[in-house]
Length: 160
Ligand code: MG
Image 1 (cartoon, protein in one colour):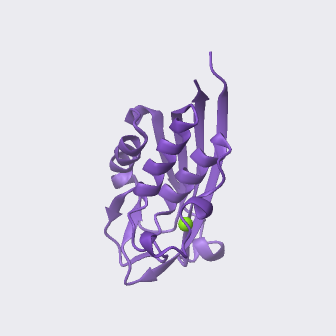
Image 2: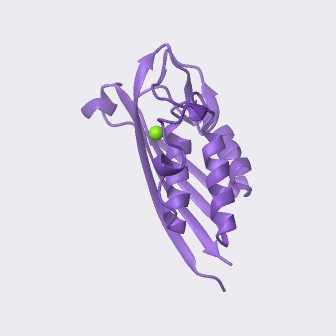
């Protein structure tokens, strides 16, 4: 049986007016969105870093530098799909992804299954192998004040 590896990813972007809110590739109706060079999808970014971390392949900033104009306004699921291809090229397969999103508003629960499915498609796994949980920051800190949102992800990979 192959070796199992866990990888951790984290991301945070500011919540601002005039931007779309995209989480895990799913657009969520809200008065604010995440600021960034790409679509600033914190879930996809944290998941991408989790995959790269598990395979020991660096981080999202190395592979998709914000200074590179080709990534401007890129749907971040592209990064996640590329990270999956990269880890697969190195003999890994994705077993599971667990995500925690932390933001004060809006409620994520109504979109949770769509986010799971979207991530599962990008990763080539069953939606049952993707977990998405959302929490608030209890009004504390910049996330609690609605100025930012963050995501944590743990990816489990198996080496063939
Ligand atoms: Mg990011």
